[in-house]
Amino acid sequence: DDATSETERGAGVERGAGAFDSAVGGAADAGAGAGGACGAGSPCFLVDAGGGNGVMTQLERAGVDWRRVSDLFITHTHIDHVLGAVWMLRLVCHHLNEGDYESGFTIWGNDQVIAALEELAHLLLRPQETRFLGNGVRLRAVSDGEAHVILGRKTTFFDIRSAGAKQFGFA
Image (cartoon, rainbow, N blue to C red):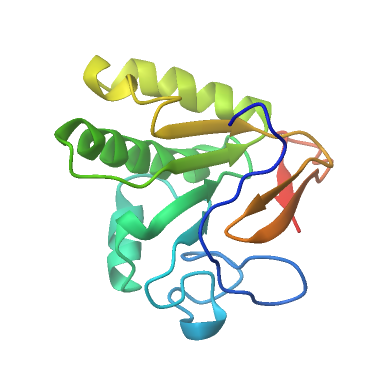
């Protein structure tokens, strides 16, 4: 339920002191085995999706099936962080429309990130795909200090107070 402050999603794999590592392109090496956020067969939490369809290549290289990415966190609205999210969004919505994707998919980010993704989705995706926004695909704007349970772990989002683009991190 979008009105609640916590979300329960599958069983994640723990690593580090209260933080996830990204499946691709972040603190941990992609597909980091039992210690990473993408343990064998478990759902994945991906941080920043890169600058386009290269996210699919990176996931493939890491041995991660895109269908395992249940949650995606976008730190800020720079093009090299957001465009890969559009590709993931397109892929998930397409497969929801085809009836061959059953999992939920949540994109987390600050209000500017989520507003940008909503606008891009409506500009670039077909209506039969955007109909899944809010129904199969959740775009969740988070605020400074807001906490949710994602993949079984309490995750607290915070504003890093960047001098440039509004940018969030998580712990």
